[in-house]
Length: 221
Image (tube, rainbow, N blue to C red):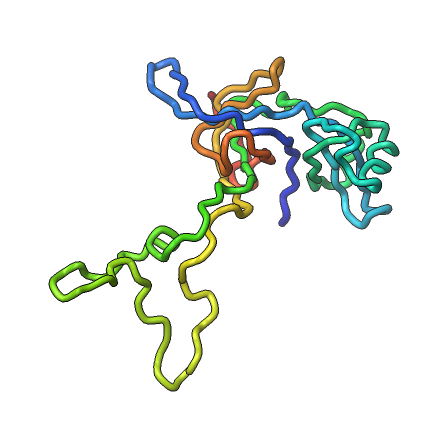
């Protein structure tokens, strides 16, 4: 069964630490979660599926293409740099309207969330850094072969390299999701979320925060 969950767009502000009531250190990521604006509400009758399109981080109108300008003008909202859809069942769409503001108060402390972003780009990397290969033995007789990938195939059969073989290549700068992160603190006035643990991407990167798909039951903070 597919679980639909509301979410919000935001920006990763960085990491810090806070102390709980017992004096224990909790590493948290600070996310500016909104305020977001509903740009479009997609219904199953009109679009074939239900979703709420959110916009975050206003930009200059001259920086957008003509189709996007028309899209925002139709919604009578400012143009936004970050635009994403949150899938929702048809029954939940009635709670949202174009132009409505969505803030960090949709989450509560103790709740679990899934955070999606683009991981840090690490350029061209070898097999040890990219795939955690152990490397070759560095004993006597080994020369210039300590961090190589080793053999990549067999003899005449199959006579080719299998797809998906771990090799050197581009690392990072890919969509990534970290699941089951606990919301430690919510500051609705400043639209800040303090989430335990690390989330994908560098400081300043856009992220999508959704209610967790696996751990849906909130626990006391």
